[in-house]
Image 1 (tube, helix red, strand yellow):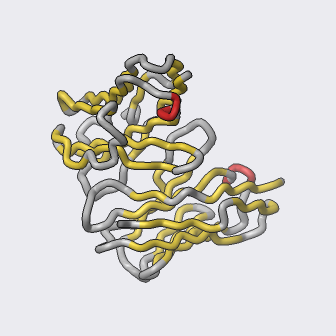
Image 2: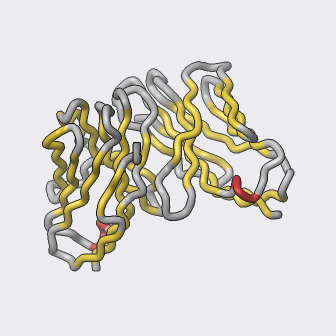
Length: 110
Length: 113
């Protein structure tokens, strides 16, 4: 059974204070690791897909990296508008649906 | 494209009533997923369709839940009879293919009293 664990559960940062969110996973035959952003009352919004260890992707202040056991979402010089819940999900070899972690609730204070 | 469209956005119903949630996927997407989100369990996959055919319904909690996809532009998730423990946010998502990123709708917040 695919499993995803995200840490920390919640993180409060000052504006401009860089940090990283962790996503540890166990999966049989990784067919993609996905990062989503979710704002209150809305559906998850797609950010990145990573497929193999060593792969990195960037978008504005966000950078996602992948190893064989975990993924990191690095946030550089965050702004208050980066406040959201960040979800990590994996697609394994056994099914097409995504298995999600419970997310990291990120608050950026001005 | 307007994205994945779900209706209603909010639903309040009494225990024992039938509830139908609706979803219109992004045009041209071949895969459709139904998820449920709660504080305790996070996002859980209920069922997914590929080319309108149900592929995996192992996440459907029990026989009270059923889902259909009569055509490429419409899907329903039905709960009959509804129970208070079904209260959650239900999301529909679609993807171009079964192994590409999924795009989510805004969700339906269901409250069963």
